[in-house]
Image 1 (cartoon, helix red, strand yellow):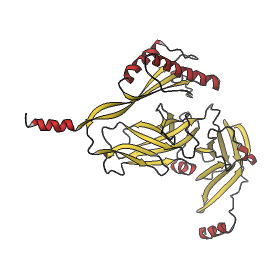
Image 2 (image 1 turned 45 degrees about the horizontal axis):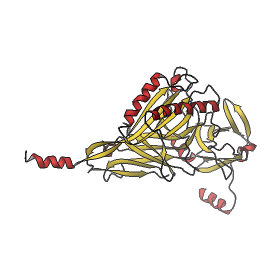
Image 3 (image 1 turned 30 degrees about the vertical axis):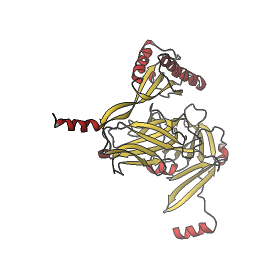
Image 4 (image 1 turned 90 degrees about the vertical axis):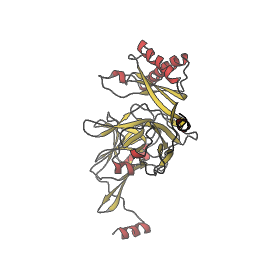
Length: 393
């Protein structure tokens, strides 16, 4: 026993309380056009209180959803009322709910109406659990070229344990074949896509979550309409985005979106920080249709002060942009610019939207601008343009 006693002291000294973050979502459902809590919903909420009280630093949110059978304004109010119904019930039980909100769930499948008429209560907190002192692992930050930060517990000295690929503009999105289109083929208003890859041998096996910080990337402020979307593969084999209930916060200076993702079994995960444009008065989808395929590798729509956000290459002649939450932009004064390659030379096509053929609804697509086949590549002018042409042959 005397020989074992020093060993026991060493083991006890090697144990520390390690705060492990946990996220759990509780879902309750409502009758059509109603935000009253059913007995079943109350039973679910009754289980939230004892669960939340076992954590420290707890953050609880309640987000309500509706179907799209009513008007936009009515649905928004109904969604918020559902979120508040859950909040009021929980706070009567002594549980503080920090954030509420409403959203319109756009799944129109009649076989799953409960997915539309619901509220999701997310509980996030830290639970102290004993773990062996981390002699071999440490928290490290891994930063992508565009400023995305991933914080994960990895083996010391493993500089390449996490890699971050970012898709924040038309050039990287087109090159990576990344398109902001959801499972219902709706174009999304994207704030940034990324792919995070792990060397699983370097990850702390006791780690359950890692933190992602996404910069605003020129946006004016944090947009609370954004949510986290993850990829699923459809019946046609194409990857599309599906919304999640993962909670988003921001840093103290409000320069980053922040969220925690569970460590999965895959070596790589694709993430999209997006918002739906369906029935959203602050976001419109603008389609640019070309008369023939150009295989553009860079696209912009701008008037110099305001720019549309590139969202997707739908096919070889159809591209989608969004109005970036500003419904007052004068689209007709904007200029579409597309850059493509021909005979190893960069060619540019440019056209003002007001001079392009326009339709408010054609082929089921709203706000379409058609690039006429008479459009010609823009020739660079001036001395330096002449010099560049000499070097390009």
